[in-house]
Length: 406
Image (cartoon, one colour):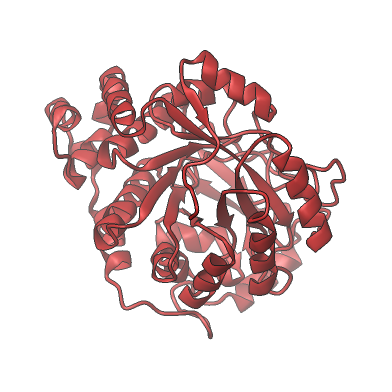
Protein backbone atom coordinates (compact mmCIF):
# COMPACT_ATOMS: atom_id res chain seq x y z
CA UNK A 1 0.00 0.00 0.00
CA UNK A 2 1.20 3.52 -0.71
CA UNK A 3 -0.32 6.85 0.14
CA UNK A 4 -0.48 9.39 -2.65
CA UNK A 5 0.19 12.90 -1.36
CA UNK A 6 0.16 14.94 -4.54
CA UNK A 7 3.38 14.27 -6.42
CA UNK A 8 5.04 12.78 -3.34
CA UNK A 9 4.29 9.14 -2.52
CA UNK A 10 4.97 8.01 1.05
CA UNK A 11 5.50 4.27 0.94
CA UNK A 12 4.15 2.12 3.75
CA UNK A 13 5.90 -1.06 2.68
CA UNK A 14 8.68 -0.62 5.25
CA UNK A 15 6.39 -2.34 7.77
CA UNK A 16 5.31 -5.93 7.84
CA UNK A 17 1.80 -6.87 6.74
CA UNK A 18 1.12 -8.19 10.23
CA UNK A 19 1.88 -4.85 11.83
CA UNK A 20 -0.24 -2.99 9.30
CA UNK A 21 -3.21 -5.30 9.82
CA UNK A 22 -2.90 -4.97 13.58
CA UNK A 23 -2.83 -1.20 13.28
CA UNK A 24 -5.97 -1.20 11.16
CA UNK A 25 -7.87 -3.30 13.68
CA UNK A 26 -6.88 -1.14 16.63
CA UNK A 27 -6.98 2.32 15.05
CA UNK A 28 -8.63 4.97 17.19
CA UNK A 29 -10.92 7.70 15.87
CA UNK A 30 -8.65 10.56 14.85
CA UNK A 31 -11.26 13.19 15.74
CA UNK A 32 -12.04 11.98 19.28
CA UNK A 33 -10.05 13.27 22.23
CA UNK A 34 -8.37 10.70 24.46
CA UNK A 35 -8.68 10.63 28.21
CA UNK A 36 -6.68 13.42 29.83
CA UNK A 37 -6.58 15.63 26.74
CA UNK A 38 -7.75 19.17 27.46
CA UNK A 39 -10.68 20.27 25.31
CA UNK A 40 -10.78 23.98 24.48
CA UNK A 41 -14.08 25.70 23.89
CA UNK A 42 -12.67 27.59 20.93
CA UNK A 43 -13.94 28.15 17.41
CA UNK A 44 -10.45 28.49 15.90
CA UNK A 45 -10.17 24.88 14.69
CA UNK A 46 -13.59 24.97 13.00
CA UNK A 47 -12.87 28.31 11.34
CA UNK A 48 -9.47 27.22 10.03
CA UNK A 49 -10.67 23.91 8.62
CA UNK A 50 -13.74 25.45 6.99
CA UNK A 51 -11.64 28.21 5.41
CA UNK A 52 -9.16 25.66 4.04
CA UNK A 53 -11.87 23.42 2.63
CA UNK A 54 -13.51 26.41 0.90
CA UNK A 55 -10.22 27.67 -0.54
CA UNK A 56 -10.26 27.34 -4.33
CA UNK A 57 -6.93 28.76 -5.42
CA UNK A 58 -7.79 28.43 -9.11
CA UNK A 59 -10.32 31.25 -8.91
CA UNK A 60 -7.73 34.00 -8.38
CA UNK A 61 -6.52 36.20 -11.21
CA UNK A 62 -3.47 38.33 -11.94
CA UNK A 63 -5.51 41.37 -10.90
CA UNK A 64 -6.25 39.77 -7.51
CA UNK A 65 -2.55 39.06 -7.01
CA UNK A 66 -1.45 42.58 -7.94
CA UNK A 67 -4.02 44.09 -5.62
CA UNK A 68 -2.84 41.83 -2.78
CA UNK A 69 0.84 42.66 -3.26
CA UNK A 70 0.31 46.41 -3.09
CA UNK A 71 -2.48 46.53 -0.52
CA UNK A 72 -1.71 48.46 2.66
CA UNK A 73 -3.98 46.31 4.83
CA UNK A 74 -3.90 42.75 3.53
CA UNK A 75 -6.74 40.39 4.33
CA UNK A 76 -7.05 36.60 4.31
CA UNK A 77 -8.53 37.00 0.82
CA UNK A 78 -5.32 38.73 -0.28
CA UNK A 79 -3.32 35.92 1.33
CA UNK A 80 -5.35 33.39 -0.63
CA UNK A 81 -4.49 35.18 -3.88
CA UNK A 82 -0.78 35.32 -3.01
CA UNK A 83 -0.70 31.53 -2.57
CA UNK A 84 -2.53 30.82 -5.82
CA UNK A 85 -0.92 29.63 -9.07
CA UNK A 86 -1.77 33.04 -10.51
CA UNK A 87 0.86 34.56 -8.20
CA UNK A 88 3.82 32.60 -9.59
CA UNK A 89 4.52 35.07 -12.43
CA UNK A 90 4.63 37.82 -9.78
CA UNK A 91 7.24 36.20 -7.55
CA UNK A 92 9.77 38.99 -8.11
CA UNK A 93 7.25 41.63 -7.06
CA UNK A 94 6.17 39.53 -4.09
CA UNK A 95 9.79 39.08 -3.02
CA UNK A 96 10.49 42.80 -3.28
CA UNK A 97 7.45 43.67 -1.19
CA UNK A 98 8.21 40.92 1.31
CA UNK A 99 11.75 42.24 1.68
CA UNK A 100 10.39 45.74 2.23
CA UNK A 101 8.07 44.52 4.97
CA UNK A 102 10.84 42.48 6.57
CA UNK A 103 13.22 45.45 6.73
CA UNK A 104 10.44 47.66 8.11
CA UNK A 105 9.74 45.35 11.04
CA UNK A 106 13.08 43.57 11.61
CA UNK A 107 15.70 45.85 10.08
CA UNK A 108 18.68 43.80 8.90
CA UNK A 109 18.51 41.42 11.87
CA UNK A 110 18.59 37.63 11.47
CA UNK A 111 18.21 35.58 14.63
CA UNK A 112 20.41 32.51 15.09
CA UNK A 113 19.65 29.38 17.10
CA UNK A 114 20.24 25.65 17.11
CA UNK A 115 18.01 22.67 17.91
CA UNK A 116 18.92 20.21 20.65
CA UNK A 117 17.34 16.76 20.45
CA UNK A 118 17.38 15.29 23.96
CA UNK A 119 15.35 12.10 23.24
CA UNK A 120 14.03 10.26 20.20
CA UNK A 121 11.61 7.78 21.79
CA UNK A 122 8.20 8.07 20.14
CA UNK A 123 4.84 6.39 20.64
CA UNK A 124 3.33 7.56 17.34
CA UNK A 125 3.22 5.81 14.00
CA UNK A 126 3.58 8.61 11.45
CA UNK A 127 4.74 6.98 8.25
CA UNK A 128 6.84 9.94 6.98
CA UNK A 129 8.85 10.45 10.20
CA UNK A 130 12.16 8.87 11.12
CA UNK A 131 11.18 8.74 14.80
CA UNK A 132 7.99 6.71 14.23
CA UNK A 133 7.61 3.91 16.74
CA UNK A 134 7.93 1.13 14.16
CA UNK A 135 11.09 2.45 12.53
CA UNK A 136 14.14 0.52 13.67
CA UNK A 137 16.58 3.22 14.76
CA UNK A 138 18.90 3.71 17.73
CA UNK A 139 16.76 5.12 20.53
CA UNK A 140 18.27 7.25 23.27
CA UNK A 141 17.37 9.72 25.99
CA UNK A 142 19.87 12.08 27.58
CA UNK A 143 19.99 12.31 31.37
CA UNK A 144 20.47 15.66 33.13
CA UNK A 145 24.25 15.41 32.89
CA UNK A 146 24.05 14.59 29.19
CA UNK A 147 21.68 17.49 28.54
CA UNK A 148 24.00 19.90 30.35
CA UNK A 149 27.02 18.63 28.45
CA UNK A 150 25.26 19.21 25.14
CA UNK A 151 24.21 22.70 26.20
CA UNK A 152 27.71 23.58 27.35
CA UNK A 153 29.05 22.66 23.92
CA UNK A 154 26.39 24.69 22.15
CA UNK A 155 26.96 27.70 24.41
CA UNK A 156 30.66 27.72 23.48
CA UNK A 157 29.65 28.69 19.93
CA UNK A 158 28.15 31.96 21.15
CA UNK A 159 24.54 31.01 20.49
CA UNK A 160 22.06 32.31 23.04
CA UNK A 161 18.89 30.66 21.77
CA UNK A 162 18.12 26.96 21.80
CA UNK A 163 15.21 24.83 20.63
CA UNK A 164 14.68 21.71 22.75
CA UNK A 165 13.15 18.73 20.94
CA UNK A 166 12.05 15.24 21.87
CA UNK A 167 10.25 12.40 20.18
CA UNK A 168 6.57 12.30 21.10
CA UNK A 169 6.61 9.97 24.07
CA UNK A 170 5.10 11.35 27.30
CA UNK A 171 6.17 8.09 28.94
CA UNK A 172 9.89 8.37 28.10
CA UNK A 173 10.06 12.18 28.05
CA UNK A 174 7.51 13.20 30.63
CA UNK A 175 6.48 16.74 31.53
CA UNK A 176 8.93 16.97 34.41
CA UNK A 177 11.84 15.71 32.26
CA UNK A 178 11.22 18.45 29.69
CA UNK A 179 10.84 21.00 32.48
CA UNK A 180 14.18 20.03 33.98
CA UNK A 181 15.79 20.45 30.55
CA UNK A 182 14.36 23.97 30.41
CA UNK A 183 15.80 24.76 33.85
CA UNK A 184 19.25 23.61 32.75
CA UNK A 185 18.95 25.60 29.54
CA UNK A 186 18.20 28.79 31.44
CA UNK A 187 21.74 28.62 32.85
CA UNK A 188 23.21 28.87 29.35
CA UNK A 189 20.70 30.56 27.02
CA UNK A 190 18.56 33.69 26.92
CA UNK A 191 15.77 32.28 24.72
CA UNK A 192 14.37 28.75 25.00
CA UNK A 193 11.93 27.14 22.60
CA UNK A 194 10.18 23.79 22.74
CA UNK A 195 9.19 21.44 19.95
CA UNK A 196 7.80 18.47 21.82
CA UNK A 197 4.49 16.58 21.98
CA UNK A 198 1.28 18.62 22.36
CA UNK A 199 0.30 19.13 25.98
CA UNK A 200 -2.42 20.65 28.14
CA UNK A 201 -2.34 24.32 29.14
CA UNK A 202 -1.24 23.46 32.68
CA UNK A 203 1.78 21.60 31.27
CA UNK A 204 2.69 24.55 29.07
CA UNK A 205 2.38 26.78 32.14
CA UNK A 206 4.80 24.53 34.03
CA UNK A 207 7.30 24.54 31.15
CA UNK A 208 7.03 28.31 30.94
CA UNK A 209 7.75 28.57 34.68
CA UNK A 210 10.78 26.33 34.09
CA UNK A 211 12.12 28.78 31.50
CA UNK A 212 10.51 28.06 28.12
CA UNK A 213 9.60 31.12 26.05
CA UNK A 214 7.81 29.70 23.03
CA UNK A 215 6.34 26.53 21.55
CA UNK A 216 6.39 25.34 17.95
CA UNK A 217 3.98 22.67 16.71
CA UNK A 218 3.94 21.31 13.16
CA UNK A 219 0.35 20.49 12.28
CA UNK A 220 1.88 18.48 9.41
CA UNK A 221 -1.31 18.76 7.31
CA UNK A 222 -4.61 20.51 8.00
CA UNK A 223 -6.49 18.06 5.78
CA UNK A 224 -8.06 15.82 8.43
CA UNK A 225 -8.64 12.95 5.99
CA UNK A 226 -5.02 12.94 4.88
CA UNK A 227 -3.93 13.44 8.48
CA UNK A 228 -5.79 10.25 9.41
CA UNK A 229 -4.07 8.31 6.62
CA UNK A 230 -0.60 9.49 7.65
CA UNK A 231 -0.93 9.14 11.44
CA UNK A 232 -1.87 5.55 12.11
CA UNK A 233 -1.34 5.24 15.86
CA UNK A 234 -0.45 7.17 19.00
CA UNK A 235 -1.68 10.37 20.62
CA UNK A 236 -0.57 12.35 17.59
CA UNK A 237 -3.37 10.68 15.63
CA UNK A 238 -5.88 13.00 17.36
CA UNK A 239 -6.22 15.80 14.83
CA UNK A 240 -8.09 18.48 16.85
CA UNK A 241 -5.89 18.12 19.92
CA UNK A 242 -2.81 18.87 17.85
CA UNK A 243 -4.43 21.75 15.99
CA UNK A 244 -5.35 23.49 19.24
CA UNK A 245 -1.84 23.16 20.74
CA UNK A 246 -0.78 26.76 20.12
CA UNK A 247 -3.87 28.15 21.81
CA UNK A 248 -3.33 25.93 24.85
CA UNK A 249 0.29 27.11 24.97
CA UNK A 250 -0.81 30.75 24.96
CA UNK A 251 -3.37 30.05 27.67
CA UNK A 252 -0.49 28.51 29.61
CA UNK A 253 1.48 31.77 29.45
CA UNK A 254 3.92 31.14 26.63
CA UNK A 255 5.34 34.31 25.08
CA UNK A 256 5.22 33.00 21.54
CA UNK A 257 3.96 30.18 19.35
CA UNK A 258 5.14 28.78 16.04
CA UNK A 259 3.07 27.32 13.20
CA UNK A 260 3.99 25.01 10.33
CA UNK A 261 2.67 22.48 7.87
CA UNK A 262 5.10 19.93 6.49
CA UNK A 263 4.99 20.96 2.86
CA UNK A 264 4.56 17.98 0.56
CA UNK A 265 2.35 15.78 2.73
CA UNK A 266 -0.75 17.09 1.00
CA UNK A 267 -1.77 20.00 -1.23
CA UNK A 268 0.84 22.51 -0.12
CA UNK A 269 -1.21 25.56 -1.13
CA UNK A 270 -4.14 24.55 1.05
CA UNK A 271 -1.86 23.57 3.93
CA UNK A 272 0.03 26.88 3.74
CA UNK A 273 -3.28 28.75 3.56
CA UNK A 274 -4.58 26.95 6.67
CA UNK A 275 -1.31 27.60 8.50
CA UNK A 276 -1.51 31.31 7.78
CA UNK A 277 -5.18 31.59 8.74
CA UNK A 278 -4.50 29.65 11.95
CA UNK A 279 -1.76 32.11 12.95
CA UNK A 280 -3.84 35.09 11.79
CA UNK A 281 -6.80 34.11 13.98
CA UNK A 282 -4.74 33.43 17.10
CA UNK A 283 -2.79 36.67 16.72
CA UNK A 284 -6.09 38.54 16.79
CA UNK A 285 -7.44 36.52 19.67
CA UNK A 286 -4.19 36.89 21.68
CA UNK A 287 -2.70 40.24 20.54
CA UNK A 288 0.26 39.94 22.91
CA UNK A 289 1.45 36.68 21.34
CA UNK A 290 4.61 36.54 19.28
CA UNK A 291 3.83 34.68 16.07
CA UNK A 292 6.31 32.58 14.09
CA UNK A 293 6.20 30.45 10.95
CA UNK A 294 8.38 27.60 9.76
CA UNK A 295 8.31 26.35 6.17
CA UNK A 296 9.65 22.78 6.28
CA UNK A 297 9.65 20.53 3.22
CA UNK A 298 9.79 16.75 3.41
CA UNK A 299 13.25 15.24 3.81
CA UNK A 300 14.47 11.60 3.48
CA UNK A 301 14.46 9.57 6.70
CA UNK A 302 16.34 6.49 7.90
CA UNK A 303 14.95 3.35 6.22
CA UNK A 304 12.91 5.33 3.69
CA UNK A 305 14.84 7.41 1.16
CA UNK A 306 11.81 7.56 -1.13
CA UNK A 307 10.46 10.51 0.84
CA UNK A 308 11.50 13.70 -0.91
CA UNK A 309 10.35 17.32 -1.22
CA UNK A 310 10.28 17.44 -5.01
CA UNK A 311 6.58 18.25 -5.28
CA UNK A 312 7.21 21.64 -3.64
CA UNK A 313 9.86 23.33 -5.72
CA UNK A 314 12.02 26.26 -4.67
CA UNK A 315 9.85 28.80 -6.46
CA UNK A 316 6.80 27.49 -4.61
CA UNK A 317 8.68 27.53 -1.30
CA UNK A 318 9.57 31.18 -1.94
CA UNK A 319 5.93 31.90 -2.75
CA UNK A 320 4.83 30.45 0.61
CA UNK A 321 7.49 32.38 2.55
CA UNK A 322 6.59 35.67 0.87
CA UNK A 323 2.86 35.08 1.37
CA UNK A 324 3.39 34.52 5.09
CA UNK A 325 5.41 37.71 5.33
CA UNK A 326 2.81 39.78 3.48
CA UNK A 327 -0.05 38.41 5.60
CA UNK A 328 1.69 38.97 8.97
CA UNK A 329 4.59 41.37 8.39
CA UNK A 330 5.71 41.25 12.04
CA UNK A 331 5.84 37.44 12.31
CA UNK A 332 9.16 35.65 12.62
CA UNK A 333 9.88 33.19 9.79
CA UNK A 334 12.36 30.35 10.29
CA UNK A 335 14.26 28.33 7.69
CA UNK A 336 15.80 25.09 8.92
CA UNK A 337 18.59 22.83 7.70
CA UNK A 338 16.01 20.85 5.77
CA UNK A 339 17.00 23.37 3.08
CA UNK A 340 20.44 23.67 1.51
CA UNK A 341 22.80 26.58 2.21
CA UNK A 342 22.02 28.32 -1.08
CA UNK A 343 18.26 28.33 -0.48
CA UNK A 344 18.65 29.46 3.12
CA UNK A 345 21.01 32.29 2.22
CA UNK A 346 18.63 33.50 -0.48
CA UNK A 347 15.61 33.41 1.83
CA UNK A 348 17.24 35.48 4.59
CA UNK A 349 17.83 38.22 2.02
CA UNK A 350 14.10 38.37 1.33
CA UNK A 351 11.83 37.41 4.22
CA UNK A 352 13.32 34.86 6.64
CA UNK A 353 14.34 36.31 10.01
CA UNK A 354 15.54 33.23 11.87
CA UNK A 355 18.04 30.57 10.87
CA UNK A 356 19.52 27.50 12.56
CA UNK A 357 23.25 26.81 12.63
CA UNK A 358 25.61 24.11 13.85
CA UNK A 359 22.77 21.61 13.60
CA UNK A 360 22.95 17.99 14.70
CA UNK A 361 19.69 16.05 14.77
CA UNK A 362 21.11 13.02 16.59
CA UNK A 363 20.84 12.46 20.33
CA UNK A 364 24.07 13.62 21.95
CA UNK A 365 25.62 14.80 18.70
CA UNK A 366 26.72 18.28 19.79
CA UNK A 367 29.24 16.86 22.27
CA UNK A 368 30.46 14.26 19.78
CA UNK A 369 28.91 11.36 21.68
CA UNK A 370 25.87 10.59 19.55
CA UNK A 371 23.76 7.91 21.20
CA UNK A 372 20.60 7.99 19.08
CA UNK A 373 19.67 8.48 15.44
CA UNK A 374 18.29 11.68 13.95
CA UNK A 375 14.78 12.43 12.75
CA UNK A 376 15.69 13.29 9.15
CA UNK A 377 18.64 14.10 6.91
CA UNK A 378 19.84 17.69 7.13
CA UNK A 379 20.85 19.58 4.00
CA UNK A 380 23.02 22.40 5.41
CA UNK A 381 25.85 21.22 7.63
CA UNK A 382 27.51 24.60 8.24
CA UNK A 383 28.69 25.39 11.75
CA UNK A 384 27.72 28.51 13.70
CA UNK A 385 30.64 30.63 12.50
CA UNK A 386 30.00 29.73 8.86
CA UNK A 387 26.34 30.73 9.07
CA UNK A 388 27.28 33.88 11.00
CA UNK A 389 29.72 34.85 8.25
CA UNK A 390 27.16 34.11 5.53
CA UNK A 391 24.65 36.44 7.18
CA UNK A 392 27.25 39.21 7.27
CA UNK A 393 28.23 38.53 3.66
CA UNK A 394 24.63 39.16 2.66
CA UNK A 395 24.68 42.59 4.28
CA UNK A 396 22.63 41.46 7.27
CA UNK A 397 23.23 41.43 11.03
CA UNK A 398 23.42 38.15 12.97
CA UNK A 399 21.57 38.43 16.31
CA UNK A 400 21.97 35.94 19.12
CA UNK A 401 19.30 37.20 21.52
CA UNK A 402 16.05 39.10 21.09
CA UNK A 403 15.14 39.75 24.73
CA UNK A 404 16.51 40.76 28.09
CA UNK A 405 15.28 39.28 31.37
CA UNK A 406 14.96 41.76 34.25
